Amino acid sequence: MLLELKEKAIAANKAYSQIEDRVCEWDRIVDCSDNLTKFLDLDLGEENKTFINNLNNVATTLKQAYIEAEAKRDNLVLKYALTKLGGNLGDIIDYLDFQKRKRAIVVEDARLSGEHVAVMGGRLLQTGKIGIRGDYVCLDTFSWKLRESN
Image 1 (cartoon, one colour):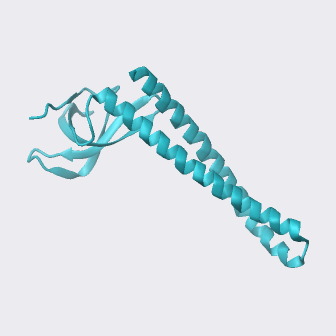
Image 2 (cartoon, rainbow, N blue to C red):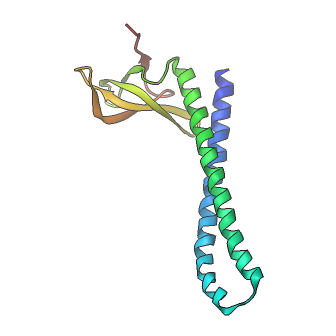
């Protein structure tokens, strides 16, 4: 099940990246099309007006697909991370940072970088309060442990 979730998260991340690239490319096209609007004053015909309007409609459709792909990616990556973690949002992870210092974070989100998943959240201070600084724990490379609930 974990491998299947990982594959779905990776596929969703790739699909999101592809849509993000297309949206950026289309934004450049639409930015250039703004220069075309001055030609509409020349009364070159209704077809030209329709063409410019269609460019904007494609941009709207692409942006909606982008939003949906981002939500799907975020959902699948979070589901994969929480399954791998064996916990939930709000749980605490104890880990060793790069300098081998003991740290803890409260799980708030997850991201995928390549095939590696990381959970992010606010640092848990020794006082038990959540600090203003956030941190992340790569579940594939950091030494970490889910803190037991009391």
